Image (tube, rainbow, N blue to C red; front, side, top):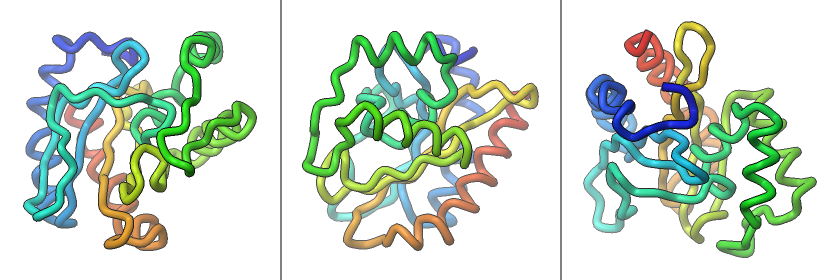
Amino acid sequence: LGLGGAYVASSSMTAAAQPVLDALRDDLHESCSLGVLDGDDVLYIARAETVRIMSIGLRAGSRLPCYCTSMGRVLLAALPRDTLEGYLERTPLRPRTERTITRMDEFLETLDKVRREGVALVDQELEIGLRSIAVPVLRRSGEVVGALNIGTQAGRISLGTMQTRILPRLRESAQQLGLLLG
């Protein structure tokens, strides 16, 4: 599949992912998604939503910008340098909120941290009140084939809770999905 992601190639990934996403949602009581890089966007290919009065209106087939989303940053961090440079030349880092990283040096430092730590945490950069955390989904070969995330309301889940309670379970699910994909 690779990161250049044709949607058709993701259908086997979607089928493998849905039970993993459903179990993650049921365990954490949070909505979770699987995304791939498609052009310059994150393409949501699978989603398991929790039932809440206020929920995020995303579904399989939704697209979001990479630079200000947790899954997007995971996918960008995995790109070869020349491909990443092409993306950055085409994509202005426009502020979506007052928290969006728009300075190139800060953005590149953030991607370096994502690469080192294997996790992206985005706090209200896409939309005020929305916080998300994502990890890469890796094949056994180490190839990044997607990103798995949990998105939540910032007022309900703290950054600390995302790192201590959600991140370990998110990593387990990404590893499980990677093993299913071979």
